[in-house]
Figure 1 (spheres, helix red, strand yellow):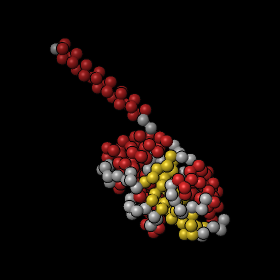
Figure 2: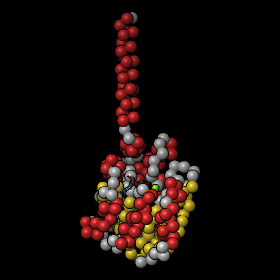
Figure 3: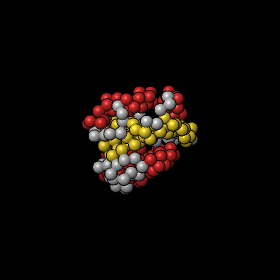
Figure 4: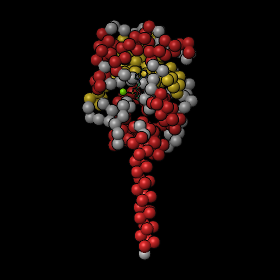
Length: 240
Ligand SMILES: C[S@@+](CC[C@H](N)C(=O)[O-])C[C@H]1O[C@@H](n2cnc3c(N)ncnc32)[C@H](O)[C@@H]1O
Ligand SMILES: [Mg+2]
């Protein structure tokens, strides 16, 4: 009898230790690592749509994350299909959600570059993109956008972009669209799409593209990622 009691108590102690260790590991992980783990456990390797669905489910049900998300994502999808870019630049990779979203709609011949200055985010994106099976279709650049934009022509063999998705820190949108202009990376008809015009908001950028005379610019209302709050995308076509 005493032996059985000791055995049960020993087992209970082991379970408690295991749960405590699991809890420590969980809290030591970053949110982005938790999203990646959720994707690896719930999506299908090599299936970009299942990766997007898992990231969105985690965003709605477990922890909010700053991906463009499934609601604004549908508008972005439409712009990508309408533009059918052969060369595209993204500013702000984060976990690779929008890169996967866009590239799944592009032909294999398209060149897609994405820029991220946070190495931890870039590493998560790298694994997310590889899990989606798109590692040969996405060129990840780990750099501050202001440093790499002037190098894109020479270092990455780019002439001009057919499409640009701007979704990094909101206070550098204007700086970077001006850098794209002065480095001759836009051509007549380049479609520049910018996220989060309302939430958290990019009012200086919206004012710039609507009033500088270089773009035909339209606002497309939608919802902030994983929320009912209002947000939207600005689509600005460069006049050349
Ligand atoms: C809103 S998140 C991007 C979300 C992503 N486009 C998506 O929808 O899946 C913004 C990202 O831009 C990065 N970032 C901010 N400013 C940057 C800069 N100047 N250069 C490069 N990356 C930047 C941040 O580290 C962050 O990961
Ligand atoms: Mg965004």
